[in-house]
Length: 67
Image 1 (cartoon, rainbow, N blue to C red):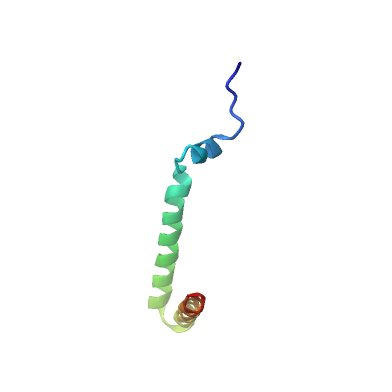
Image 2: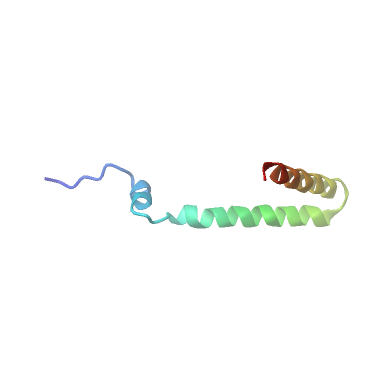
């Protein structure tokens, strides 16, 4: 009898406990890009800086309200 795989390779990796490369490093890359963009906006001055400050303030308030 053939040992047929019923799932795609990515799902097989997840089922065996191994994280796929894209998932493992993709989240880190996205977080780094978001942090870098935020830092650039905070250093830019003017309207973009105020927008970023408001976003950070709102995010912190939301986190506090959930805790």
